[in-house]
Image 1 (cartoon, one colour):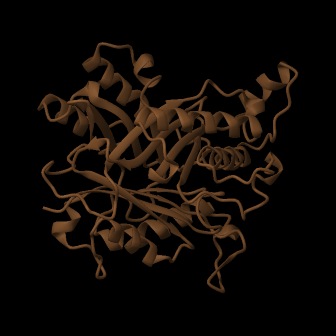
Image 2 (cartoon, rainbow, N blue to C red):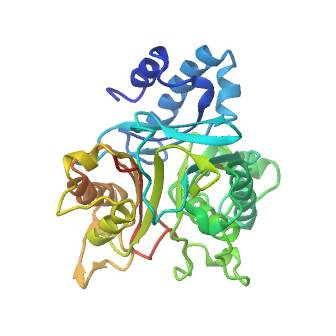
Image 3 (tube, helix red, strand yellow):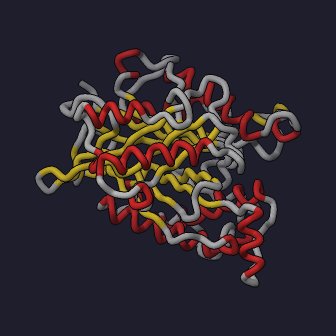
Length: 374
């Protein structure tokens, strides 16, 4: 992306006939804003994207936006590069063929220790009122959408799921006033805290759908009981959405295609071996950097990270939470982004901060989508 509204690379793929607009089912991308409540680069990109797809599908931009999740994370600090990943699928002979644009040779041999090919499912919830954000109503709403996305992908076994991406709404001052005018209360009037609570509720919803949430859990555990976490959850929050948008990614023998996905939890911001573990599951070695031939197999890398709330990493003090000049989430995106990019030799990574209840406390997770071996 040359700027936050640049969709020319996708337009070129469609114009050359390499990708059909009707086959596109989801987007995950990084824009160069601040990643905060007032990061309008995400909305700018979404507007440009939906206008492009509307021209090629004959639908209205609103109709396209209502059926294709567009999950964006603002903030390309350090070596991170603004980019977006396009997910597409099509039905072939009663099986579903999955693809990420420019993914590689469909004749590639899949890795044996990952069961099947990449499977993609999506779903939307209804618009979430401000009074539901960060509360159990949002948890249940996300769980229902995750189950719907699993059904959309034909995935019945939660063990086949590697990564669930959710985009959730936050509470702005305008939404607070709307709720109050309707006689409703909100969980917080702090927009930044509402983003954290929304992400936490999204993570709980994913865990609930995957059968990982303890039965006695209530919304009092949100941002409180960090022993509760889902190692396959990645949740972002922003002002540009009013509902929960869900993308489920897994592997299935019911699907065909060259791609597979593998994930690994990151126990902290220095967990380089976790990156290697996710790559290793796909038959890609990093010694210490991925070789050029293997780098060409990689279609997307998705990372969640979090500044350790205890102020330490492996016993040494960090200052991310105390820096009043640079937001802690910007610190962690830059740090973890550089670590993972160094392994891959590529800065086109989806690195999203705010990993509350997503992966190990103070850590996060990494997922890699790659084509099979030649």
